[in-house]
Length: 138
Length: 138
DNA sequence: CGGCATCCTCACGGATACTG
DNA sequence: CAGTATCCGTGAGGATGCCG
Image (cartoon, rainbow over all chains, first blue to last red; front, top):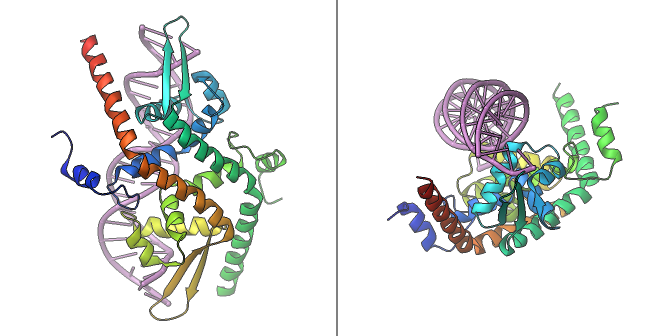
């Protein structure tokens, strides 16, 4: 037996993200992690090289890019193809499974972009109310 | 001028999640954060009290629950209604904006649950290949 | 009950340097 | 070019205790 008993028990139940020890939690967290969301969305339009992804996704460090790509590859979302040439050429693309995830997070990303004005407005209202409440308390 | 110049510059462009300083990044990160995903999905089936959310979402601490709810409220995704009774009764529900986000993360959560077997299988294949590659190197 | 304040830990993640 | 290795700071997040 190479896995812990609690994991076995978790797998006997139907996967439930509300259960703290359910593997679906990790799947969800990997897919919704800070850089994974942006990488999956970027890979939706086809194969990209490491340096292309680095340039496209603003602010990502080399370390986090490599690390996130490895996690996505291990989970079966991303396919990594290393060409044995000099200089090295490595191409990343979505697997069918990864494309399912990517379509959803891409929609979420576009939604976030489209709702920026509403969110900024909501924050202003909220902060204004907090201010006047604080002033009322003296 | 109550905001920093870089923020103004960011707002003049169309919102772009691939830009490091775009507000849409924060919107996306708030909505996809570890506990926000689960809270939004839970609130899809109606109003819930603080303690109900605490019980429903497995493993969430009191602190993170309060903190995440505050962030979601400030962004305009969640409505908080405090009833001035003893003992205190506070009810949380989705705003129309929050419901848009919740529908998407709920779908993502259900997808994660449904793809657990595929992901676990992919990990085994991946780890096995890593093992044999390491063995080949000696 | 529904918080808020405090302390503390750890791992996420950035910067830098090095390698094939 | 595409990483790996190392160091290190910050902040996410858990535990505990107090309050209205």
